[in-house]
Image (cartoon, rainbow over the protein chains, first blue to last red):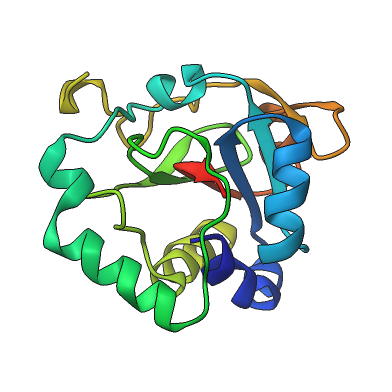
Length: 133
Length: 46
């Protein structure tokens, strides 16, 4: 997801959107991971899952963690050269993406169907552009 | 935790103070106050 967002950084900026990635860990983990995959995005760390739960995200069930789509996505990532390093955080946590307006209101949300499910950049740009228009 | 805990469109986004890569605290509200924000939660670093 992070590398995907990084690829469209210029388009997000042109659309007036800022991109913020959150994960569990310490600042050094955010710096190491984001520095290699998404150096131009803002990455933030939190020591526990409290923000996840507050945004309605929870731990995956077995199907969401080990389903065929997850295996497929993992294989595709591997063929693209992504080699997972030391995992900091909770691999069981479901991902989610939100677009928040300047008043702090959620104007769009995406809850993954499994741990590998993320919105596309095109979808984010389409929705995000309507917020900034 | 169930889908009932999911946030609705139009709901206030929960504000949290997290740490930036430099270790400095960053309030989410201070970010979206500057412009619409795509906020994505990753499973993990690594």
